[in-house]
Length: 441
Image (cartoon, rainbow, N blue to C red):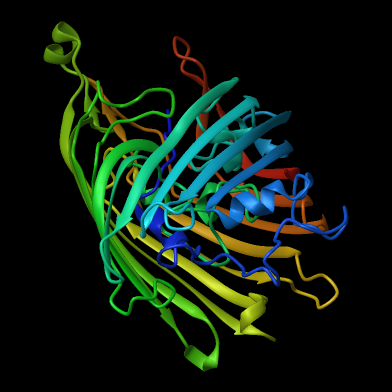
């Protein structure tokens, strides 16, 4: 089964911006020279480029680059015991038109991405990939793509519009402790985005609007979007427009217990014509060589994060809990219901302010696909669950090393060894060990 990893709100990348000129959620640097410092204290390996990088940032032009490498193996269970290595590189350009001296409220984003080698996602027996990082821009092999090139324009302090091609994974369904491409926090896709929303392409054309009820997106933000139901990081996307997918999302900051938290809710409806997961093999199918279609799909989702311990809210440090819930019809994505819950920490110790760690559990209720043959009906899947624990060690702010362990009860019950002899092999729960290294340039 081929999975295209994506998330719901393609345009929610605007959460990254706190009005003209200030990124939302980004930590404020203690000085106006954010890239300065010696080799062991600065935020990036290459530093300030003899001062030019800080000067460019002051003019609204920033370059973010990183490389992530993962070695991961199935220690027991699963479909096969294998150790695989893979990596991904990412380069992103941001332009703030106001800081550049052009006009207020404009933001341009361009992202270049590539991956190489492979992961163990196909060897665990699970539907949800255990290595999110290896899926982008395109799963498998060596790939280079341009997943994002888009522009946003704020029309006032309360509203803005945006259009272009959007990289959707890191920008929707955001969560303080469990989110991203598997390069900083959890490895498993189930803890980085809601898998019930995988009908949305990872890279796709679209347009939308954003509302800021209080002028501050840190407090509340609402998005409404229309995106194409097809798209790829390797194509421009204009030749294969399909859909559309209509989506909406709202996120609000809470102050329970006097500590930072967030509540997020969203939903989508897709008008695309899909291939159904349930098929009936009869004479019409055999003669016409067609598969049963399904028109349209929908999904709703919710997530929360809440600090339970926060020594200083300005430092974005502390320990908290997180959770997700999603629901869909279970066709064409067989995940009908999904939930995850866990504990996360940022800067868990005062002496380790840049470390991160987490532990989580997820469960997926599977709409078991059925193949109806003339004399029998075959079912292939079962409900899936998984557990993961990681600790991200910041050797420096730009050099991160992460050990990780996962235990996954995969949805695939049996592996087919021989169709003719109907020979199968049971797939046991998989124990997956991994190590990750990341360099921020």
